[in-house]
Amino acid sequence: MNDEVEPARTYAVAHLHDVRMGDGIVGYLNGIDDTLRPFGGKFIIHGGRPTVLEGEWTGDLIVLEFPDRASAEGWYRSDAYQRILPLRTDNAAGTAFLIDGVDDAHAATDILR
Image (cartoon, rainbow, N blue to C red; front, top):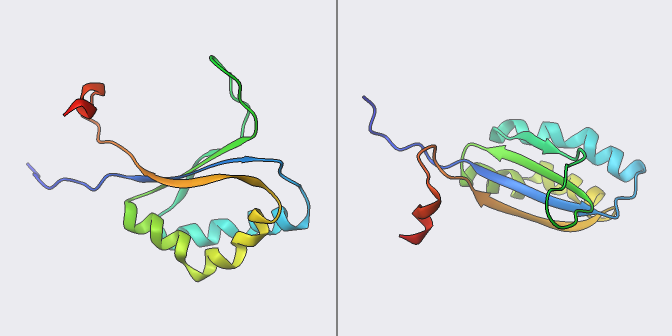
């Protein structure tokens, strides 16, 4: 039995709106996959149309998964990603952040401890 605790996966999440499709966004989309590979990153959610169950939703949701926080931070700060980042930020508004996931045994009440 392996008692080593695997680090929590980290997610890069962006809620984008007012996206101006054009050469900038196309350039960003053409370049981002290559920036993810060295850090073990992959798309989990990339836009799509949600079925809204409560409240209102506008914009696009993008979720990238990384093996751990160091990988996610390394990707975001990498020269390769920083070179293409303005292609997105100059052509879309929104919020982006990193957040750690929980392990498979997580229960809702764990946040009370």
